[in-house]
Length: 382
Ligand code: CA
Image (cartoon, rainbow, N blue to C red; front, side):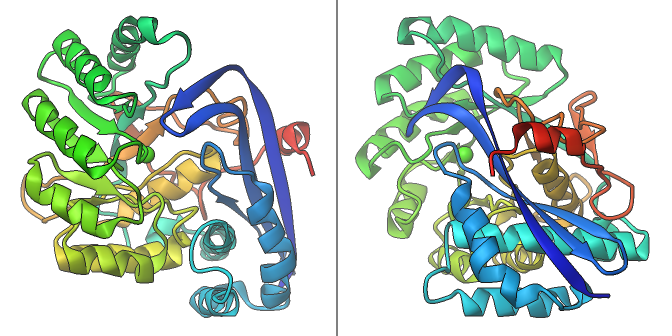
């Protein structure tokens, strides 16, 4: 089998109601979708994560100009060899960021092809599932309107997630230490002790404020404190981890096993959150998962893309071992983005739904999804 064509699809749509997180206002949702075509007629799909403020064109240009020439004509079944070639040939200007996102998009598409070639779901080709039904938590709680209305809006949103069956939810903090304490406290009080609450500052704090906030939030039973400080400050995380009892999470802005190695060695974090469509694809995320298990660190994938990214996260979630394995294991969870996105669900013919707080891993060949080409055309901007 040979790769004969790679197409990039840059999708974007303005949001009817923009929303804010600690780094700015999101006014458009965008995606960079990669389509890999083989001479046997098998087509694979991948996606490069677009963070809230990230232009999708960077990853698309990387695929078009840097990666395509390296993989056209090659056998998709040689996926690990192709990963090494893509990583090493872009190392002098890559290693992190959108370049690794671009590599991830091709890698995910190659695994989709491999699954389809063997007529098996990706998780099965990768060695089998620890679970085929994944507990999901709701991501949302962005700021939309006036700050004064935020608390009541959050309480309403929390109740909507509970009504939809979710047992856990992640609050977007980073709006100021005092505000965050009041807002998190109000949600905990409104929903009671039975639901999981995570908090995510999107690195909106310095170490002093993160310590102050972390200590104040300890009484609210917080499952993890995500990206409290700058994602490159490993020493800061290590110090914070020793100062507060809430587990620390990060990794949506870290890349490859080489990047994650330093976090494990420094014992700086409790939970890593690589994004399968950003941190290196299935090939590299499996290696990161193996390292996490060796260091006793939990792995909860970050997920904030289209249905393709969601499918990739679910196959990855199927193969991550619990940390540790036991009769009542602490299972990894799916981040289920419930924020506004005009084409997240439409892009695949059968959108993912949470049922009683769980999402089933797709069972069809490859990623187990089908792309709606009309939607691809409708939102395409390149
Ligand atoms: Ca996050």
